Amino acid sequence: MASPFQSNISTLLWQFNDSSTIEFMAAMYNLVYRAGIGYLNATNEINRQFIADDYGEKYRLPYYWAPFVLYWGEINLCGYALQLR
Image (cartoon, rainbow, N blue to C red; front, top):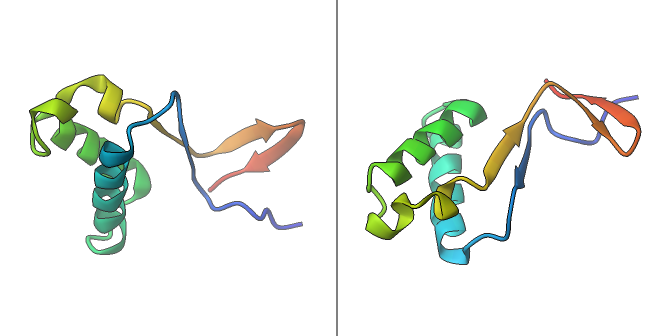
């Protein structure tokens, strides 16, 4: 049976800031869909841009960029093994 999940799962490690999440996700999806960069590389690139102050000094703090985690490969969700590609 085919999994209803996409090949990647993105999650957050803690409660997030709305404004930084909007900036982060918009920039990440822009790299994925317009520049053709994979999700993992796009996530890493946006992390680097946040750290490098490209989005303002405030967003350099890990609170704003570090909660975003991307999972791929095989994960176990509620006892069900999911193969992510």
